[in-house]
Every structure is written in structure tokens, then in C-alpha cells.
Image (tube, rainbow over all chains, first blue to last red; front, side, top):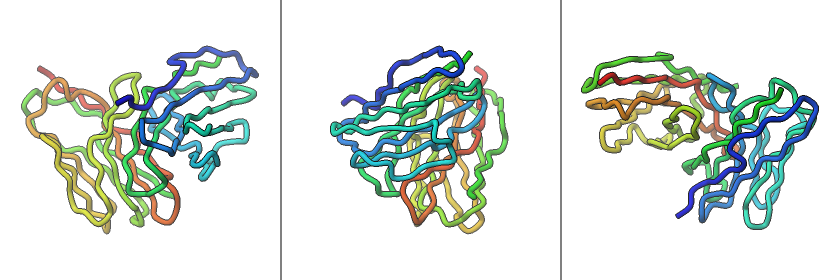
Length: 114
Length: 113
């Protein structure tokens, strides 16, 4: 039973560039959330997707956008990269939108912006 | 705005000790609370999920308690082992909306053989 998978594992980009990160949810899960974790900090909620729509969004600028595909996989796009966007980006999945559900995380994508 | 605080920020104990990690949150209107473990450079592994109607959950050597009215949770680790060394994160999900989760910064635990 495959868990949450994320690609790539590491990425180096230059300021001003754009980046796309990918996530495949755990089998049987249809809801995907994205988190940003800066070094030494807890994960910060970016947004959540369900039925191919953004359902909830955290305090992140419009440079951060996403998409969910019919097979429930998801992409996180970040435009006009800033040095401060350097972080571990985590994807989490759950079976539906119910609040009582446990989140399952992938191993993340480490993004470095130079 | 929900804020989650974890104390201590770091902890170093000899192998075999029992230990307690603390988590506090400012808004008691939570739906559930989840404890995670994170190894360096890795993702999060769910340890225990406590619904707001529950007082505690147990899994093996781990026991988590929840006191919603006081805004506190504790994670108790019995007979600690070097393999328990990791960062432990507490996360709360607020009521009244979709699964928007707020995390603490975590407690970095080192168990010394």
C-alpha cells in the first residue's frame, strides 16, 4: 500500500523563477493539503484540495497556487520565487474532508532558492 | 488565531527514562489533536490522534492525553530508546471548517544510549 509520494525530493531554483512540486496521495485518499516548513519551524498550512477545488487556504500570497487532478494527485506551483520560499514542502492526504481524520504525510520536497 | 506552543524546545535524556512532552493551544474549540514524529529532513509520521471528545489515546509505549478546557495535551513516552530520538510535533484542527491544521514548533528529543 503506497503512502504519500512527493517529487522531486530536492530542488534548487534561482530567485524569480517558477517551480512545480507534485504529490500523489495515499491509496484511498482523495483530499490533499500542502504545508511549508521552514528550518526549525512547524509546518504552516498553505491550502487544501478536494474534488479538484481549493477548499481552504492559509496565509500565503497568490504566488502560491495549486491544482488537483481527477486521480486525486496534486501540484503546488510557486511563482516569482523569493529567498524566503526556501523550505521543506510537505504534502498530506486524508480520506475526505472530515475533521476527525488523521493526516498522512509524504517525505517532502526540499526547495532551495538562491 | 490559534497558537500552539510546545515545551520544552529540546530534551536530552538517558535511555530507559520515562518522559513527558507538553503542548498547549490558545483556542479550545478544537476538533482533534494529533501528535507526529519527524526525523531529520523527513516527513511527518502520525503517532496518535485524539478527538475532542476523548481524554487520551495509547499506542505501545506512547500515551497522549487531552484537556481541552485548559488547552493542554501531553505525550508520555515510556522506557525511552535511542530510536525515539526525533522531533515531536503537536497539531490541532479547529472546529467549524475544513481540515486546517495548526502545528507547534516541536520538541527535539535526544535519547542517549
